[in-house]
Length: 229
Image (cartoon, rainbow, N blue to C red; front, side):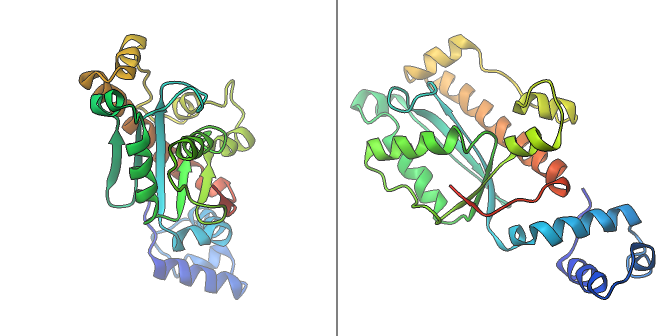
């Protein structure tokens, strides 16, 4: 994806506000095409608030789907310049705190971010983490403090696939990397096996990586709202 500078974005917005058409705009952007100018204008005109936010991509792995009976195994957050992550260990399980420590580290990492981009995250990841934080007496961000973008709905309403899963969307768009954790590894990870937890964390990283790539693929077709986590 071609990188646009802030100066180019400002010039494009200014000239469009002056009523200059895309064909005439080529004199100001000789390296761009009309389609590129049109697409970029749509993105910055509808999603320019994102450029002012500290955006990140995230995913969690858990032992199951219900936060009152299950717990987080790991989480990964990717920002513009680095990756943050944490994973439970055998000591967490043996001491009976389960995912309390990694709930705390997740919330601490959120202090430096504005927007979380995930997949089916508004229906699973965020409610799961919030519930685990409540159970563990960890202070999760209040309504309005952080924003989220759930790409599941971008896929559901902007594409027409046999399934609206992350795997189906990334495979369709030629984004490699989606894999599945073997059941045996998952079972051993629940018990705190070090190598199995590394295996799950690697899967966690992969999902975040392809979520970021999917975001850039879909960005110009979507208008993202400032929805709270």
